[in-house]
Length: 179
Image (cartoon, rainbow, N blue to C red; front, side, top):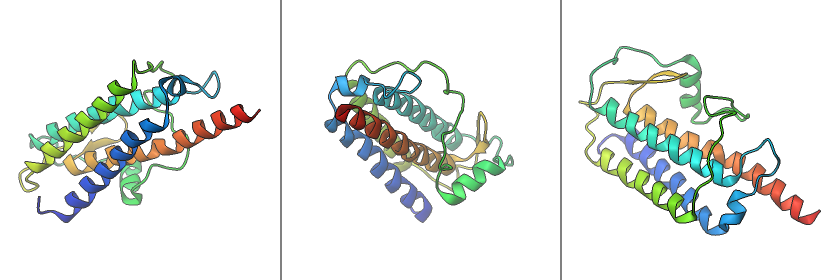
């Protein structure tokens, strides 16, 4: 791993996913199941969403690393802006998972093990990463084509984006306790 961008992105990914792992200690399973209102996800559903999506992003990282296909294709201008800002827009985003039922986790250990496995897989992948050979891209459903490092950055940004949702859920559940 010689590329400074790669090191910075991998360190950010590790820090962000570790925060999600550490936050699990702040909740009981019952707390993870609580929904702030009927139309919102519970924190457990947020965890299911981020583990499912981050695992998919890790698969895309590996696929882009192993191909030369689509290296000439571009990402959507919105994706370019997000990556340049290193952040999702500060708004509730509707996407493919919006409105779809997201299952609750069976237990906290399931969530912890999935997050740890993703972290391990991503770090193993990048331990063998050679940026000079990884020139391929894979297609994001809405944002077009990402290379391996773009997927890594996108995965970390997505995890970080859901901290906002976690904060909203925590605030609503905390105020409901006081009422």
